[in-house]
Each structure stands twice: as C-alpha cells, then as structure tokens.
Length: 534
Ligand code: HEM
Image 1 (cartoon, helix red, strand yellow):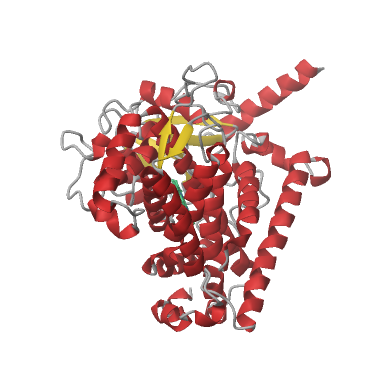
Image 2 (image 1 turned 120 degrees about the vertical axis):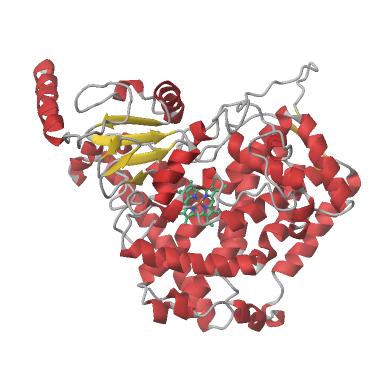
C-alpha cells in the first residue's frame, strides 16, 4: 500500500514538475548543478545542518552559479562576490523580493518582519522609517550606549567567563533595548523573542521550511502551525506592550530617547497603525541581538586558537589607548582591531547561507536562464572562502586586511578595513541596515576585551591543554560557535579595577535622573518627520 502511495506521488510529481518546468529561451541554458529526481530534486543529498557546506562542494565542482530544483522551486546558489553583486545589486530591480518562510503565517505580506517581507509597499515604507531612526541613532553615536554598556559587559565577563554566551547576548540585548525602547531592562525578553524567531525561520529547526507542501495541512492537524501560533501571539502581545509603555512614558513626559519614541512622534505623519509601529521597532530589537553577539563569541574562539593575534591586537590597543578602554574615536588609529573584526566576519560568517532573495522577472546571466520565482542564495560560506580573493581561506589571518600583498588590502589604513558593505551584510536594496551600529559595538566590545583580558586555552586538572574545535558551529540561520572551554584572566588587577570604575561611571552617564536630561539637544538633531512619510 505504502509503495502504491509513494509511486502515485512520484508519478504525479513528475507530471507536475514537467508541466511547471519552463522551456528555455533560445540560446540560453540552465545553470549547472547536480542532477536530481523530479519533484524532490536532490533533497536526500542536502544535509539539514550546515547545508551551505554541501552547496560549496557543488559550487567548487560546477562553478560560481549552481542551480537546483527542490520541491518544485528553482534555487540558485552563488559562490562569487562578483556574481552576487551583478545580480543582487546591479540588477536589484529583478532580484530583491524574498521567498516565503513556510513556518511563518505570512512572512511576505504581514507588516511585521522587515528583513523577511516581499518587495512591496509595506517593505518600502518600513525600510524608509527604519533608515531614518537608525540614521538618527548613528548621528548621535548610538547615544554612546555600545561604549558605556561595555563596562558591565567586561566586568561580568571577567568575573564569570564560562557564562560568556549569556553575557555577550545580554550586552547586545541591553544596547538594543536602550535604543529601541529607551531602557536596558527589556534585554531578556528581546533575547527570548529573538531566539524564538530565529528558530522559526531556520530550515534546520522546522521541516516545514524545507517542504513547502506541509503548509497545506490544515491548522487543526498541523503541529507546526500550532507551535508558530503560540510563538507569534506571545511576541505580538509583548511588542504591543512595549509600544504602550513608551506611549505612556511620552504622555507622562518621562520618555527617554528611543526608536519607539521617534516612531510614535511621527505616527501622525506616517499613518502607521499601532501594530505596524510596534513591529517596526520590535523587529529591529530582534535583528540586533543574536547577530552581533555571535561574532563576539567567534572573537573568543579566534583568540583561544590564535594567541599571536591577541598579542598584536593588545600591542596596538596599549599603544593607542594606554591606561584607558578603547573609545569609538580611536577607530582611525586602530587598523589591527578593525582587521581582526573583518577577519572574524569573513572566517566565520554570521549568516553563512545568507538570507535568500527571490527573482520577480525572468533574467539571463552569462547565458544562464534564471526564471521568475528563483530563490537566490549568496552562499557567504563559499564567497568568503574564495581562494583568489582570500588566499588560504581557512586560515584566520587578519593580515590579509593589513598587508598590501593580499588582494583584500585597501588603503588608507585610517579608514580601511571597514565592515561597511562587506559581503556578509548582503547586497543591493536588501543590504543590512544595522552596519553602523554593528561597527560601533564590535569596535568597543572587542577592543575592550583585548584591553582588559587575556584569553587562552584551558588546562585540565592534570595540566593538559584542552583543545578547542575550530568549526563546531550552531545550525540555525545565525551561526555561532557551540560552547567551548577557554580561560580568561584580567590583564592586571589594576585594569580589572578600572573596568569596575568605568561600569559605575557609565551607569551614572546612561541613566541620569530624568530631570537633568538635555532632551532638547537630542531632539534638535532628530530629522524632520517629513522624510518619514511614504
Ligand atoms: C554582524 C551583524 C550582522 C550581520 C552579519 C547582518 C547581516 C545581514 C544580512 C546578510 C542581511 C540580508 C541582506 C540581503 O538580503 O542581501 C541583513 C538584513 C538586515 N539587517 Fe542585518 N546583520 C547584522 C546585524 C544587524 C543589526 C544589528 C541590525 C539592526 C539593528 C540589522 C538589521 C537588518 C535589517 C533591518 C535587515 C533587512 C533589510 C531588508 O530586507 O530590506 N542587522 N543583515
């Protein structure tokens, strides 16, 4: 019986596949790739975990564009920064939509998750609004929160390095909680909703994200829809609560500067519904936590494995900053620190399979036909391992950004290396919107760690060094090292005391009594609401 059913599915699938398979326009060919079966393509050969590695193997074999049809959908995996730029930036008009995320109810059309929305009016409106409040934040140096929050981050890390995963997420969570809602206290909620959404959109977590047809099972009989319903309702209630909190604070005249305050002040002009206003800020809260903290965890791993780079970094930090923690204004004088940051992003890209784009019009590239509806994946794992752009790509080597003998080197070193527009932030119309904030957070947090602490391999009770795996990373869309052992000690008792002092001063500066705050000065620099209206 089972065999009959499977046979029927295969026959129907073949017919469906042949009907849907478009004829090639004259003189074009399909992008090369591994052959598969009708309907299911090559699904048995694609691991659910770290699938980007399998696609890199195919890219190495077939070239920078690999085409594959899975469950009736054409996928194109790119392994070259040039091809990704040609298609996703230069031809952005054709390739900037997003595929549906099956596990979510309406990821393309609901006014909720900007990074997942289709290329529609809601996305345009929200991108404009978010650009504006992130710009306001950038102009104000993100109100110095990334720098000042470093005090608590460093002090907690020095006291309890084994708890580094929570401590780094708490840091990025507190920074984004201040920026989004005007107070650090919501960081645990932000972390928790970020993890929930990350799981919901990751193919490695839900089979629905691999087999779109599972979405057709009705709600009552669909366990995945139940799980998602619960997650979504809880998140929506919380976002609306945050919206209401800031609104109440504004009515009482005690709201601190925040993205939510800015959006609320301009709601009359933008005509955003309350729900959309709540999500446009809440979403940025979610986007800002796990991404940045993952790279900070990679820093701990890289320094455990590469003490020689910790020494070089510390030499620069000590020369430029001496007895104080690195500040954002030190950036032009610290190319080694910027090179370490760049290399962390290249060596272990945070979204190794990136966020796919969807094609809205047929296209032909280099003789290859790309039909409308193709999902394009700039495979960051493969792009950052291009041996021409990055010789010895598996090596963690910040020198490739500092030494003119490497193709990735760029001058002047007061400006480069710079993470702005680096391949791991995506392309074209959909490029990441958080680069300024990320740059600021990385500089002070990683600079602060180098200034305050020595990281090394741990030694067990018998005096043997505990080796650390070079690439055991999590499997969700945002990738971070699986928990690993390392040792961290303050570089001196004096520096440890300075960190504690800095933390106490920072708290006074960040959270002054409301009556002493110079709100007029902040508001003067906020752009006019006119630009917000769509
Ligand atoms: C190191 C940290 C980060 C990395 C590596 C990163 C990477 C990315 C990537 C690959 C995309 C998709 C680009 C594309 O489709 O071509 C993206 C989109 C986005 N990112 Fe980031 N991101 C980071 C941090 C942040 C932060 C901190 C924020 C906000 C505070 C943020 C906000 C966004 C938004 C709003 C989008 C969606 C843009 C759109 O679809 O129009 N990101 N990011």
